[in-house]
Amino acid sequence: MKHISKKFIITALLLCIAVSGIFAAAIKESSSDSLKVKEIPDFASMDLQKESLETIMQSFAADVSDYKTKYASIYEKMITSYSEGNVDDYFDAKGMMRNLSLPAITAEQTEILTQRIVDEKDESLKATFAAWLYENSRYYHPTLTFSKSDDSESGHSHYRFSYQISSEPGSTVTLPSMRTNFTGDGIFAGWGYDSETVVYEAGSEITMPYEDVTLYAVYKSGILFTDSVTGTEVFADGDNVNAPSLTAPDDSFKFIGWYDSDGKKAEGAATFEKGESAVYTAAWKSILIEDIRARHYPGMTVPADKEFSLNFYIYNQGNTSSGKLSIELVPEKEDSMKVSGGTLTTKGISAGAEKSGSFSLKVYGNSGDVVKASIVATDADGNTWSTPVEITIK
Image (cartoon, rainbow, N blue to C red; front, top):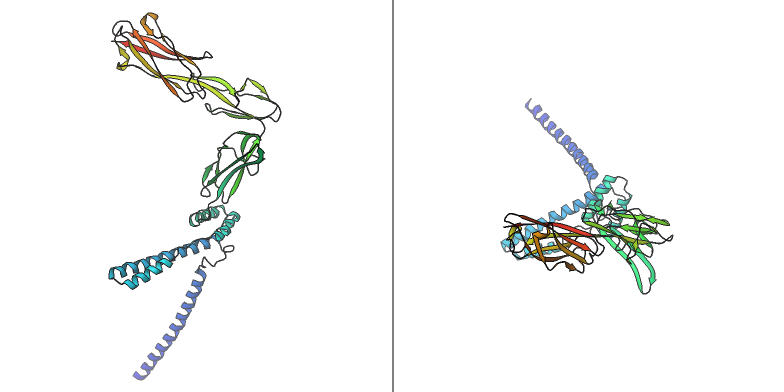
């Protein structure tokens, strides 16, 4: 009975070993098949025109991960050998580090992948892959080129314009204006894929494309009215063009008129020859009289019947020269003050500039009286600007 039992046990064990061997082989084969399905092709040798974009990104990421692992291992070996004083191992590791190269995408590969991006129909995948390529390839930097080239000679000069914007695909870029609105070709109207049709206006915001794109300046015959003060810009064509009307920002602005680059003024409805082009700019005068102070007397409180200086600044906030200005201090009541020197004059103040001035005067009255007056500036055309002044008697 014991003999039979022993024989049975041995047979059973042998059977189990055989079965386990078969089962293990099956697992190994299954695992091998699974690994084959999940295996990612090597980036350097894969066909970039056929592999999926997801696989391409995964493969490159695997190469980068492998590089980081090797770098960390070699660096650890260098540190260990250095601390142990093992010169041979240290320089061996240093040589390995020198020969280790960070994975990179070549110019040729970038060209292939850029075309893949352009051809991709899935917009989400296109954007994702473009952002990935922009980050990982130094050759992928889509550029917007704005061009205007006129090869016709005028004397010995050529007129050319070229400007470039390079930004991440999908980002927002603002289209520039031309350096000049007017050339012999007409008025700058905007940008297009050719020099005939406007697709985008200057100042428009567009999405950065996935590949290099050139936009051309488009010119049209007509009249451009432009105003820096109100922000008005009106383009008109045809035989009869009316200059647009403008609304002043405030009462200090005096509209002088529309002028071309030669100083010719457009009056109301102007008639132009068909095909003629010109740019007219709005001219404004605006004078501010500010920072008025009684010298040596804070708070504009001064003693009666004692001469002092009333200082001020005149600022030209218009977009054209003020021309000759006459500045007067005009009292509300003639017997309340005496002004020495009379009227001040200046030949002109440039746009955005300022000049200082001062009046010498005495005021009369009792303590606590408020003497009122105005500083008035008048230009050669009779336009006036006035700022009130109040002086308190001590």
